Image (cartoon, rainbow, N blue to C red; front, side, top):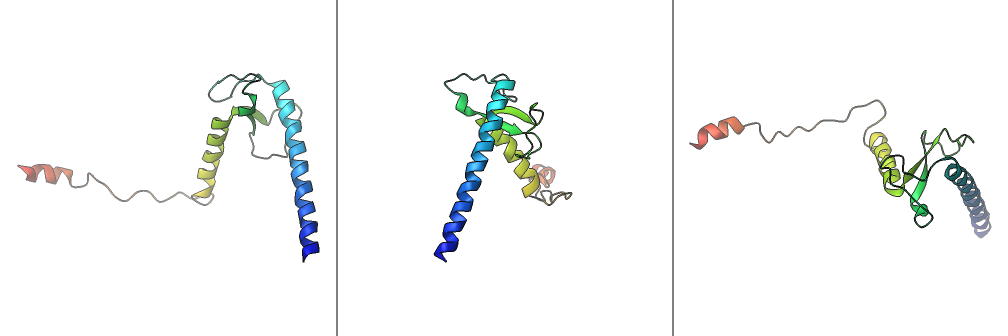
Length: 119
C-alpha cells in the first residue's frame, strides 16, 4: 500500500510541475502581448502589483493556449474570480439546458386588501 501511495505522490507531483510550467509559459506570453490592464475594470498594473493580474482563458480550456493569445485576456484577481463565479453559478445551480424554479413567495400579494382594511 505504501508503495502505491509513493507512486501516486510522484504522479501528482509531476502533474503539478507540468501545470506550473504550462501556466508560466502562457502567462509570460500574455504579459508580453497585452498591455497590463484588466480587461474588465481597466485597472492598470506595474511591476509592484503585477501578481494581481491573471490570465483568463476565454473558452475555459487551460490547455488551449494559441501563441497569438486569442484565447486569453488579462483580468485582475477580483474580476477573474467574478468571471469564474458567474460560470459556476450558471453551470452549478441548475442542469444544462434547464431553467431554475422561480420564487413562489410574493410579499405584496395581499397588499391592496391590507391597505383597504387598515382604515
